[in-house]
Image (cartoon, rainbow, N blue to C red):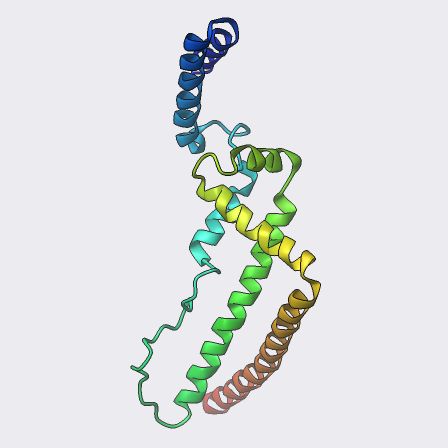
Length: 192
């Protein structure tokens, strides 16, 4: 394919307008066909190859999903709980929310630390020209981080809210640890 594209470029550069346009169109179509198979290129030659680990983890965790990862209950169909069960379910829901914050932040940082000059060059080259789910994910994360830098006041509020949720998570973790330690003591007494 590379030889074919090279021949078409040579034709496009050296022929009259009609043939040149046809050769350019052939180059474009061939490059777009090649782009469809980018994930099958050998190691070291795939665009966005250094993001592949992040993409796999994102696919498995999907931190951008609006639905919870672990607990999902349709609205209006909330079950009736007995005793402390509702409190424990609410704790689980809160943990699910905080987990999303931690996951989103972690993958945002992973993407930013993986971005290099070559990847940025690829992103700029394909921006608006081809459909690329990988590039869309990267642009979304970059846009969020650029927005954070540009709108300091608004982003500060978002970070402060996230920090409050994380503080709740820390407090809740301490409470849960104490509950588990009590269970261990109770089990130890039963075993004696």
